Length: 494
Image 1 (spheres, one colour):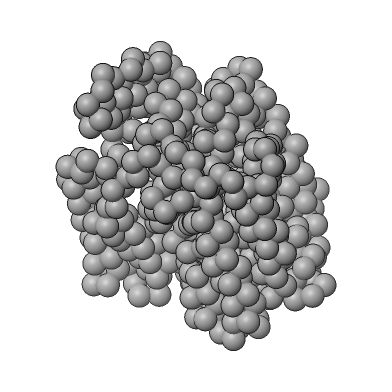
Image 2: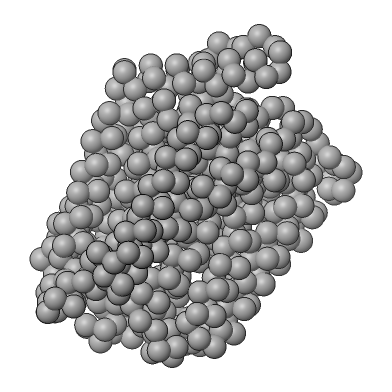
């Protein structure tokens, strides 16, 4: 991400004057398909399982291969876009994402599908952080930038919530392969519109590439997710699983020791001296892990336990999507008017209450009770996105806002990966112990209820006077470091 003032590059290639709202809409197209693709697959999982003869762990990898790669490479792709040109990287990423989508639709086996999901994810990593950087440099006035970030956060929540109903309709009417075709026309439109209306830009001084830091981040996530998913199959006390957990821990230690020594670290640990920033990262992990685990288990429950079709499963999740769609923009306005505390408290309460309702789930639970749980969860999830982004970037130096937003986005994807991995693993282990699928899910619902409590607690903590003071101190530290590198006096952090 950019750390200094940006410079335009060949602005004459864009036709007509800059249209900020159009640029925002083009960037949101990429967010729409990247975020939706993380959830649209959920409703199609039973069909994929039947068609490709996949195991539960195979289905987990279909989701997590995508989210894990996106989480690992988001910050690296942002820095490369600053170096090579944001519009160029945006268009290249969209092209690769479309290629991966096409290959996914042609997959002949579960291993091929997982590999092609990785190709998709490689393209996705070049989209969201780059689009956010384009937005940050298009909307230079603070209020306009805050509004644009609010729209961005709302689109993120809405697109993820719309994935299951759209996926259900496509799977039922055309087949599961069609869920990947939807990306092709949207992606093509984004490429053309970007060429016409998005000016090219680079950072005046691009951040240095940090290959060691990138390798360590990928190792942390890959080893951890692999250990959680494969633990039941290989046994938790096996040398392979213990080795994977150990490798993940050593990679974390490596990050803590190596990154502070870098001038331009991939992951600037000074951000985490800000309590609001650290809280935003944890809230993102908790809320998105709950969301992805919620969708993963409900898609399997509704189709494999209740016998619903993919289409009717998608319809059942429509209340969640509608609640998220309605509450996401409301949350943005609430954050602007009252700060992040009300949105975070209501979000955590919604996630926790919905999970508590689901702890009573049985094979014969009424659909009315399920719809109530879905609506409450949708309200909670819809309210959480805007305060995550706002909490992450507010108080940080403007030059660091893009990197702060990238860490928040990475945290979302880490949560998404962990949610599916933990939910599938816990349920799989309990089913192997003799419980029915429905009974086996109860432990996961209690875990989700705990994540709601964490969101509420951090919503209170991150808005305390002590937390705000830590944010100012972290911002000043970052300003001083940037000034020392440039040889200019540091501005006083606001």
